[in-house]
Image 1: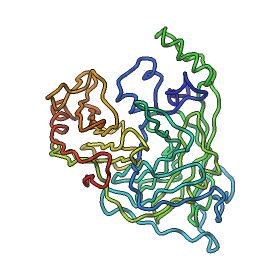
Image 2 (image 1 turned 120 degrees about the horizontal axis):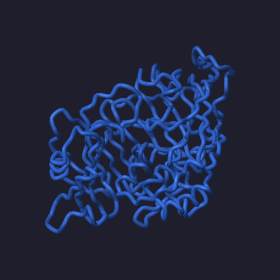
Image 3 (image 1 turned 60 degrees about the vertical axis):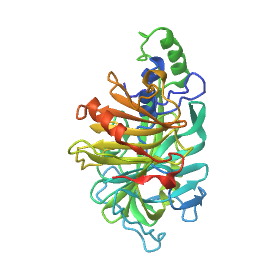
Image 4 (image 1 turned 180 degrees about the vertical axis):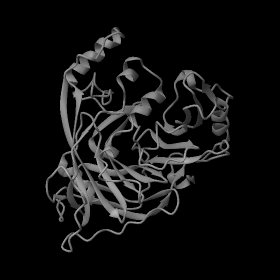
Length: 396
């Protein structure tokens, strides 16, 4: 079957399911952290971007224009002297971001941003597309903008656009375009998802009959567009929609690419000071969100892997995932009075209440860390104020 079980968190209540939560998570009522992993798997950081730019879809320079069709593309087109003058981008000197927050019509870009040593990634949200966590509304990511460092992304290897979770996406051959005066490519994307009405009925049935199978659900076709362009010599940026029920219009994908905005460098921070890590481990990726943009305001991946390709630092990275969350932990993993950390060995994660309605969770990914490691990392945290990013500490 060429689908994954995403975009279904709101399937029973609403007309179209929401992304990043699996059917298994819903019908089995799995733990809170597993539900979060699906919802923010491709997360990025945000909150304190230095530049905010408002852009309408009908940009003065217009969206990227196809330079020609064909299945074989040897190279991207050269930027014309009459094109829009390229913007001046720079790479971060440390673990951080040099991209600004901006808007394109009803879409916001950069309220959630991820910084790694290989790329910066901004999440794309649409104003009317939200979900709830602990009774609070939060936007749902509908796409990403990723700016890679030099030599990491090869636009002619279209398989690099394939999601890390194995989702079966069909990617058309690259066609040359010009984006904001820079050479680039556009790609036609297509995928299938279970019919949303049938999926809602299936979820209701599965709640009473865990043996019910989704294999007979009708598969509806969906399509979208991705854009890649050389924003710095040898360095490529890519706008990719989420592959689910909600689709960003191709012209909006183009406008989002055109409007990517440089900003003064901002070093990655977290709402705590990190203590000692296990030998050989380091901070591999930092995702931060503006307060109110997500229930997870900080998501830090700790690993000893030295990744070199364009793959996402996230769910599939061996090590540990440390999150700061607005809300309250479930009763089964809430530390008892006087207890600093509570661990659930069956799921491989530990919880610590910080203050008010904020808590920390750290989860093991793979077998490179022990529950003892998780406990020591979480116990050694020196929290700041999660609601005030100005008080956060540099990390990485």
